[in-house]
Length: 196
Image (cartoon, rainbow, N blue to C red):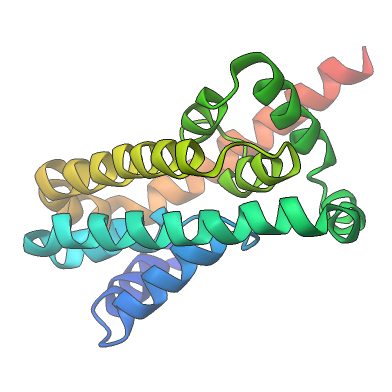
């Protein structure tokens, strides 16, 4: 069943669309505040489709993420009482509590750490606002952390991904179904371990 190869082809077509940069900037900005999908999902195929634009795409993703960080910070600073029910409903409460512990332990460096953890970056931007972190250091560290991540992704795709693209296209269905199988086995093992 050619599900994953079709998805890969569709993603590559979207990455070459005339409005793709607008979508990338919009996703990057909103993901830093509330949107659930990380910009890497668009950045990776866009760099694969346009390797010569890798650094410009990383720059666009970085500064729009920092712009979104302002929004996340403001949401935490001014509206945490309104946001708490949504944070809980969307299943982010445990991650929000983890972020508060990070902030208590690491201060401003929690934002930098948050750039590379599985915890969504929006949790750190909103928490920074809740904890009334100094705005200028917050923005500086958010810029550095996001730039480091997105330029690294762009570099990997520009120098390794372009060569790997034909392999990905050829074996995407096998790799996709293998990933699904590994995820199912992992969930079964994890649920078994929890019930013991």
